[in-house]
Every structure is written in structure tokens, then in C-alpha cells.
Length: 122
Image (cartoon, rainbow, N blue to C red; front, side, top):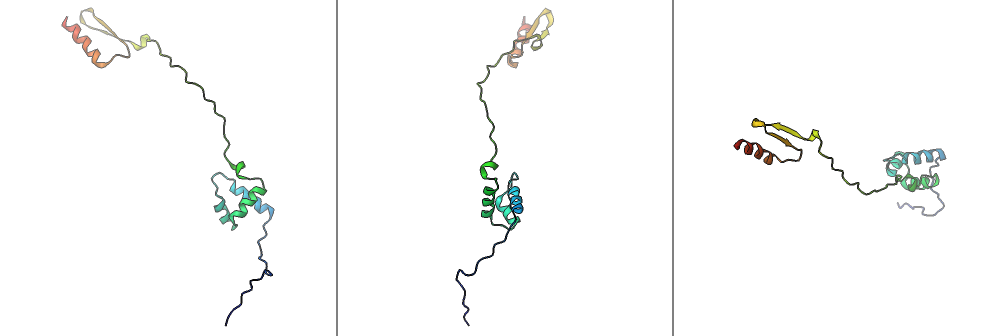
């Protein structure tokens, strides 16, 4: 037995009728940061293309949902100010025979070792 399928356009598809409030709720769910339109559409059992259409209709177009840009002002680098050596940056060492050695903060350890050795030989 052969079945005959009706291919005429007489039979109309029935679409689900969704209220405007539900459509706005779906659009609002898509506007949440990090939300995916396809995930929201699946949750509400709706085609994602419909959600994109509703976003345009109800004012949540992609350009509105885009992150806002903040103005940035670039200024040239300020010249570095070298602080002058103060008494806090100087170490004073008193050695036997009345010698005093004052050492600044930018002396290398190898040079510092030479000073006491030289003074002891005198």
C-alpha cells in the first residue's frame, strides 16, 4: 500500500504564539554579560534567529550590548629625578688609627673590600 503525501500549500504550519512580555524577557536574558543567544534560545525552546530579530525589535541591538569604550589620554614620560645623597644614604666606618671611611649607597662591594685592606697596610 502506497501512502500519498500532501505537498500542497493548503496546510499551514502552526507557529507558537509568544507574548510580547515573554519576548522581552528572552531579550533581557540575552543582555546579561556573558550570556549566549543560542544558549538562551535553547532554554526557552526558541530558534536563535527569532531571538536576534526580537533583539532588534525591542532595542537590544548588538551595538547597544557592546562594551563601552573609555577615553584614554597618553602623556609623555616625566624625566626621572635623581635624589641627592643625604646623610641617611651614607655609612660612616671608624677604623683604628683615627681613620674614617664614608660610603655612599652606590659603591660596589669589591671596591669596599679594597679600602680597609689598603688602610691596614699603612
